Image (cartoon, rainbow, N blue to C red; front, side, top):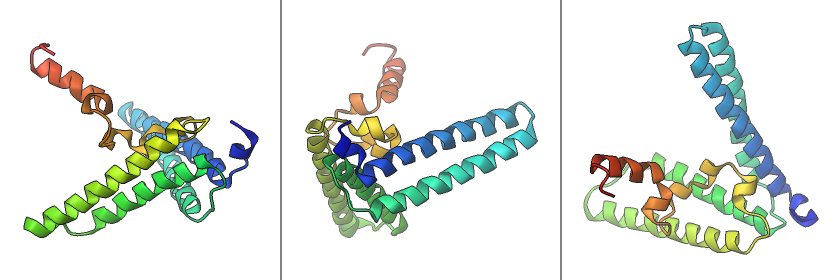
Length: 168
């Protein structure tokens, strides 16, 4: 990464977010494995450690939203956070039925298309990729409407092929 990118406070926050997310998922996995092995106390300690890491992730996401980006990569990280905030906000609203519900869903899909279009252009024109800084699930590439379904969900494609008797 060029010096200007690493000096961007949003990029630094993105790297911290990745580290805390990796620690959170590792500790959460260790909690599950410990409990499955009958080590309930260890499972509890790993669970608490995972919760602290998750709290750190939420705090860093808040900082990303409240820090001015100084590079294209930092701006891309904030676009990803816009998408995350939008999805969180969307999930809080009651879902309507009929025409109003369709119109709301149509607007939501339009926003998603624009966000992923912007991210695609930015990601193609940066010296570093978002995936070099952020953890994969944060970008939510699996819901990118511009990517073919087979690319977004390789596991689903494999499962479909298995259900079809391997005909794919």
